[in-house]
Image (cartoon, rainbow, N blue to C red; front, top):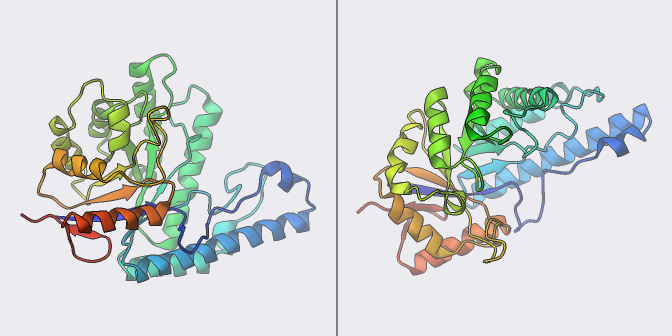
Length: 312
């Protein structure tokens, strides 16, 4: 059984980000020519930085990485006329070639304001447009991956909210549906809620271990993990791992991963199947490598810098 460790968006080691942005308020103040140049410069910087990050990951045998969902600012704003996917078509293809050639696993976690089960039709339409845009971006890159979202709003109660999610999910085109994976959250929709939605819609569920600890209603993960993994019949399961910042801010992410959280997660899963773990820590790749050093000290067997073998 192999476990690949990954990290999200920013690399602390080379200290670059692919999430440079501009607000619409500032964009609106510019002339037409300045608007075009500003967006072009920001997107070019983001894509070039993403390429640097991918190369860094390849050199360090990091096989699992989360791309930013903010690579292209104002992409779906209804008052911004800028065809980024066409303008940067060759660059997106190039980045996709790097990902495919090196067998990197990448995904995207859409922002919290993407709420598919909102009671506000404008929010739902905006969410659908954001999903569609990222689907088209991934298509330009020629990569097959996932977009992670949460169930979202709890307006009018949990069961009504779940029904809205299922109904609104059906508004997506088939290609978009095929990219969506659903994550349990730390306050409302626990692993049982999320799993039932995933089974109903036949989509994968990504388990967030920290969220489960925060929001479990006395549900035991070991009773659900096999079913969660079964939702990944077409791919290797993904799990999110973070440690609480402190006792007072328990839901917030720590800078690093407490090794005991990792060990407890592995013991709880106890299934002889490959899976990937996305490290969600403030120190990003530095947190990943700190964890690997500690695991090596505990005599965990590593195939390379970030891949653990747990074959008994």
